[in-house]
Each structure stands twice: as C-alpha cells, then as structure tokens.
Image (cartoon, rainbow over the protein chains, first blue to last red):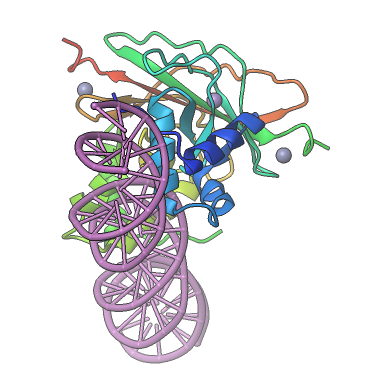
Length: 126
Length: 126
DNA sequence: TTTTTAATGCAACTCAGTTGCAAAAATAAA
DNA sequence: TTTATTTTTGCAACTGAGTTGCATTAAAAA
Ligand SMILES: [Mn+2]
Ligand SMILES: [Mn+2]
Ligand SMILES: [Zn+2]
Ligand SMILES: [Zn+2]
C-alpha cells in the first residue's frame, strides 16, 4: 500500500510513541503537538501508523479514541487483542498484558473482542 | 431522586424498550421517534431511564451510544455487567448472557469491565 | 536537478451530544 | 375542579471529535 513518508511530523509522533508505554487520547495528542502540526495532520498520521501496524487504537470509556504503540504487530498481521485499562481517577490509560478469553456463542461467529477495564491505578489506589 | 414523569414521550420510549430484546443506537432512536419527539427529549429521556435502572447503555464499535432494556436493575442496584455483541454485517447489537471474568491486576483496583464482541450474527453467518 | 507522488495546512464541514430558556404538560396542593 | 408547583419539552444555538477538498509544500524517485 502507501509507502509512509518520513516527514518531520511523522518523526515527532513516532518518537513520542517510542517514549511511552501509556496510551494517549487523541485530544491530548492534538494538544501536545498543536504547535508542531495541524489537527488534521495528526489524525492522518495516526491513521497511517495504525494500518502500518506501528500503533493500535481503541476507545476509552467516553468513546474517545486512544492510541498506543504496538508490540508485535505489522501491516499484515495485527496481533493486538489485549484489554485496556483506564483509571477513573487520574485518567491514565494503558495496555494490559492479559489473554482475553473469547466466549463461544451459539450460531455466532465472533471475530473480535474488546475489553475495557476501569478502576483506579497503582498510584491512585490509596 | 427525581420522580420520573409519565409523559407521552416517556411512554413511547418505554414501550419500545419493552418490545425488543435488541439494543439500539441513539441515531436509530432519534430517527425512529423523529415525528413524535425532539432529539433533545430522547437524549434526556434515555438519561433518566438509565439512572432509574430501566435501561442500560454502552458504546458500540464506532463509539456510538447504544441502549437496551435492563433485566434486573434498579436505581440503587445496577447489576448489568455482561458483554455486548455487534454484528459487523447487519449491524444488529444485543446483550449477551455470559459472565465476564474480570482479571485481577497487581496494584490496580478494577471496578468495571466492558466487553464488546464483534462478528457475524446467526442470520449473517452463512 | 527535475519530475512525480505523498503529506500538510487551512478552513469549512459533519455529526453525536449538550444547553439555556421560554412554553407546555404533569403532578401536587388547595 | 381549580390553582400552584415542578418537571419536561421544543427549539435553536452551541460544543467537540473527527473528516474533507483543495491548493501548497515536502519527500522520494528518476
Ligand atoms: Mn493496547
Ligand atoms: Mn446489555
Ligand atoms: Zn490513576
Ligand atoms: Zn447480522
């Protein structure tokens, strides 16, 4: 497909995802890079990185799109079905290393499962 | 809290939820009742029904809010932690009777788990 | 360097969801 | 039943995430 070009903006976003294990919501990303690049550019870069298998996306509790770096994914093989955790206190969102057991349902063909866990993180759990 | 008033609009929405087991997205609801009531009214009625425990809400794959009737919930006790299924072919969305096993994570206090299953439903599975 | 093709900025747009406020309807009080 | 009180509704305008068309700019290829 599209050969992703190594632009200044792509570099910045890529570097950011390499520097953190946490997931980040689009709003924060747009804000974070508001001085470096346009809103549309971020959305488009995220799209590209996503279908290249560099990052993966999921929705937080509020339905806001979040992104995090992929570990062992590629454009052709997107092995990224793990739960995500969102702290209702500090807002931190992260990937959870845990195998989701996909329930078998009669007469249904379940292709994917998205599990979103909410609660309080290590820092916020008193 | 607020004593929910038995208006014509509330009746219509309530009757609808009593008539189906499927979940329905807000867009479809707004469309369905577009001749009977205003968009804002639907959203407000859904809010009220939700915190009265009459219906429960969750987000579909696209992040669109969906509603379905509650089985054993009340205002004080909202026992509604089951998975939801969304057919990627016909768009049907429904509640799944299946116990979600909430993973224990070290130093995290997990309060809630939302599981969204996607695939093809009975009718769409050839 | 020149040519080709992809990426960007910008501004305008879409669409789900919200809000303030005056009018209408439901319930409570008289 | 009539009147007073409180909730609900319609409407129109707004918010905020995400998208789009198009002209310009920057990468990569030739
Ligand atoms: Mn993840
Ligand atoms: Mn349900
Ligand atoms: Zn936290
Ligand atoms: Zn189907």
